[in-house]
Image (spheres, rainbow, N blue to C red):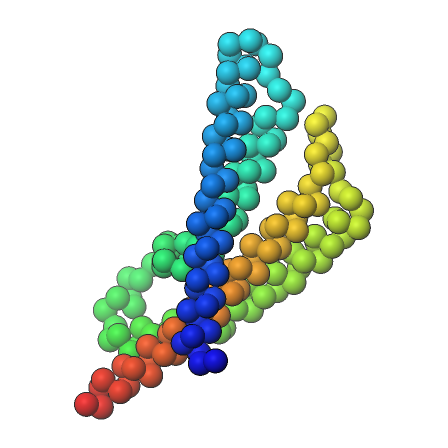
Amino acid sequence: MTAESLSKKLETFIKKEGEITSFLVYPLLFIVVYEVFMRYVFNSPTTWGFEATTFLYGLHYMFGLAYTDLYDGHVKVDIFTSYMPQKVQIILKIITNLIFFMPVMICTSIWSIRFAFKSTIGLEVNPTSWAPAIWPLKILMAACFLFLVIQGIANLINDINRLKHSEVSNES
């Protein structure tokens, strides 16, 4: 398997993950509308509505991290790099990916997996009146950080390939 095909497979996985989890917006919308209706029409708010919307929004956000990175949608400040040659920009992307992004995201993934493991072993629940199980959410959070690492690997492979191709185009 070539690096390019590995990158394409990783990106396809992240794209499908993002497309599938984007449907979390529908239960989120339903719960918000239901909660507003119960609160303002029947003056009978639910004990679980606000918490459920917070969890669903959090999951929707977390699942969107890698998908957003796939399409280069995260906010970045490129005041200085935008004036640099394309080759230098690619080199800087590779360096920042290796020095900043990968170590931080790998450590975050490891810590979130440990956090999820402890939560799962203890069958952790949220200390509220509704008291939902939150260990499944922590498992999903750890998975989302892993998805971001996967996308970071794909970005690194793509940037290295772009650097190789820019060297070839500079020689001709």
